[in-house]
Structures are given as C-alpha cells and as structure tokens.
Length: 206
Image 1 (cartoon, helix red, strand yellow):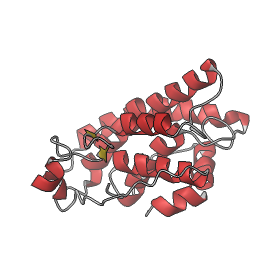
Image 2 (spheres, helix red, strand yellow):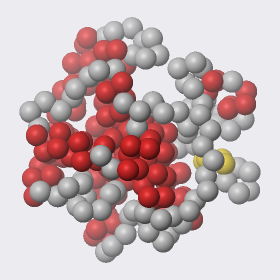
Image 3 (tube, one colour):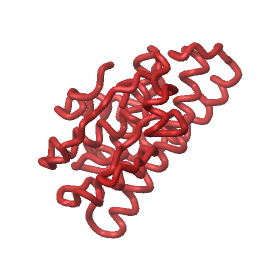
Image 4 (cartoon, helix red, strand yellow):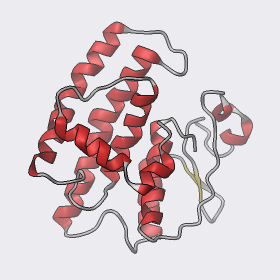
C-alpha cells in the first residue's frame, strides 16, 4: 500500500471501514512508496508484475493486483457486514455508483492532477487539464444530485465502496492543492462528513 495513490487508498479505506464495523480481517499492510520508485523494485514486482499498487497476497501465495477485485474478494471472504448488501436492486445501485465514481470521475481526476501538479514530476499540460476538467463535470453533477435527498453518504445511511473510491481520489487532489468541487455544497458537506469518520481519519493523511 501507499497512502497517496488513489487505488491503494481506496482499499485501505475499505479495510478500515470494515474493521470499524467489526470485521477482523487481520491484514498486514506494507507501504510501497511510489514517489521513491519502490513499486519498480524486484521485491514488489514479484507481487505485482505491472509495477503498480495495490497488491493483496492470498492464502495460497498468489496475488490480486487490482483494487476493485481485491475489495470484492474481501467482501466474499468476510461476508458478515459486507458493504454491498440488500436487495438485488440495492446491490446493483451500489455497484453502479462505484463504477461511475471510479471510471467517470476518479480517472479524469488522476489525469487532471498529474497535468496540473504531478507529484511524480510529469510536465504540466494545460490542454490535458482543461479536457479532464470538462470530463469531470457530468459525474460531479450526478453526485451532487444524488445527495439532494439529504442522504449523509453516497448510497444513504451506510458507508459504501463508492464513498471509499471517491475519497481516495479526493485525497490526491488535496495533496496537490487542487479543488474540483466548484459550486457544489452537497458534495462539500459529504466530504466533511466522510473525513470526520473514524475509519477515514485512520487512513487519510491530507
């Protein structure tokens, strides 16, 4: 894990939320500092040949290397208190919102961040930043509208994987001192509520 990159932070938040709800996963978390290039060293490449984070070692010694399958595996392995629950419709909506956040918002957020103030030293790219900023507006509007019924979290009263996914990318935005919310007071209020959670405070650094 590394406490800055969005994908491992999403998994770290998920684990913290599950443990806060009473699950005992007993997962040892190992920091792999991508800023210092530790993800490209042989020790980590043995875990993840793509040189990315996160990676989860399973009981049989194999590894999962994508954040959402890691979370889905943990949902299956520790089903009591799983974050995705309820009716098929509720479960479908929970998965749908998480995918909207990850694919339509978190991806452009990451590209935008690296285009304006990359912690990895990528050159600034104003055209790319403008393109990604425009791409973020529809999903941001979608989430603002989702919160218009006074729900405290993205799926309602209970924390969801979508909350973890969005907050993980927002930490990256805070680290590079970038605000992408604009005039969206409901998202700002959600952000404050989520960061006040005990699980979030244990993981988020910025």
